[in-house]
Length: 444
Image (cartoon, rainbow, N blue to C red; front, side):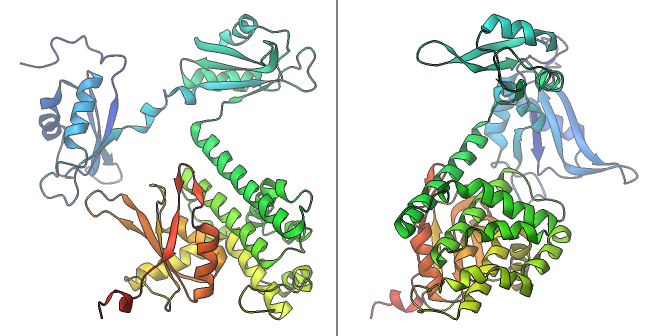
């Protein structure tokens, strides 16, 4: 009866190892086998166990490999987010194991730069074949058919690609090239998205500058350096880095805010791409102190001197304006620190804190992966955020792609609508609008 009889001992080459979560801790491989067998013969099941316990305790999740890819996908369709096992509060979560993604083409495709223009595909193959089997090799050519001096090489495994990088990157300077050969992983879809986001932001900055300053030269191309400065300041609590930002002084409040938004959006793009660092608090608290010191206010004198106006409030006292500028930089430079404490207060309070009339916003069309932290970082630059919440579907535990943000004043909320309504992130355009007050909805 054993379903494995008609199989050789190994699973099919395209079989997928699946990760399965939300299984009872009392279950062993035996019960799991009974759960999975209806979808096809099972090659292997490993329950993940906590080895520090004696005997080792199940962590409530496992890996399962079916002999065929088809069986794994059928099991996923039938179980993932659908079937809830006895005693569990959430349905089974089933997805390809992280190790499985590793054969995606983008994980083993290399970009080769600074290649001699005399090389053809064959020469490149010969150069890189010592590292393993090459699936594809392509030289980039212009419309005239001439080599642009760079190529893509796809190996059959990531390990081969990594070895090629180790051995070949900057190992020689090829004929007619100004610097040594470059060998690195080709940009993934995510990298391209992120770069597009940054370019868009840079473009918006440029339009903003053109409108305000008759194109202050160089400001438009500023984004990457600005971000680098912010990151440098964050990582090293290095005040010197901020004097670099200072050189761009002479901006008005709107530009200041936009720069901060830029940094926050880029930071959000980066945090959603990677998971948050183990403990950002320790590295950033010293930086926070440095940022809000009086020395920083003096540094910001340049900003105050331009006599900034705050749209509605008329000219503020130059120093407080400069100081709020610092706070914005601090918020933009240290988003994790600032926002974690807010999120902690928020979850401690349990309920959603509301701001005064006209200071509460609904945000629609959020990217699926955005959490509270991300919208907080995105809306922080416009004022003092008292709460930020993404709505989560109780059934699936996934974002419903909308949320709300409350400020402590309506002016900030209006600034946020101005800047962020219609703002594009990846494929989505945000919709930002005021939350109707309770009295609006009454019929009389």
